[in-house]
Image 1: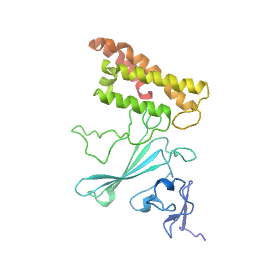
Image 2: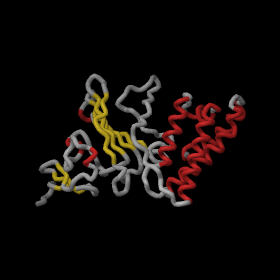
Image 3: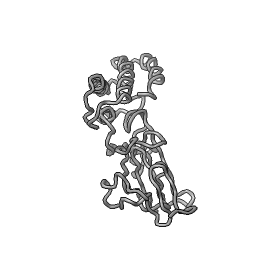
Image 4: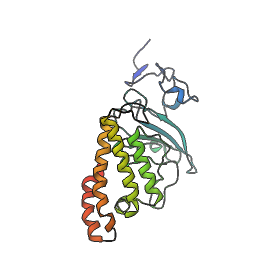
Length: 252
């Protein structure tokens, strides 16, 4: 029985305010046995929210009064009907900071990459850990990639980490040439599977057009970037190709 204020429709689920529970069972509840299948907002609607019902992942973090951060849980929505919500593909972080006053305690960070979870410059971060002296948080590779192309991008990032490469300097360094070449080979494999309707090894389904487009744009970007790497000590050559990075970089 519904009355004004008793029922809220979030599109992907209905919420009964009288009992603070969902009307329908969470489709991914088996992954989170510590929560009821009918619970919503992590069983704490005051602290946490779930406005769209799904993103790729929602990471719930608590910062205690001493400043120690804890990752409470990760909600995985990649197997839902659309795979992500209206905000777009990305990773959402909901942070409860006990050090702040009430109005500032609850913050949300949304990272949207160029493709999937890992392809682009907005990689998942360990916001529950301490940042470095420049305010940068460590990368978080614990979130599963959404498909084979995304997994390739994650491996590419790890390969850069192995040689200590970061930012535009790392992209233009000859130290990352091998990582880029391996990434291009994997992009060709994604393209081959797409053209021949072969299943993606992560999803078990046919490679999507979006995944193929992401693989080929990345290949184009790194083919351009890799040319001057043998001239890495030549400042003029590096500067010349920085302009190409600006043109293509945000999309790789």
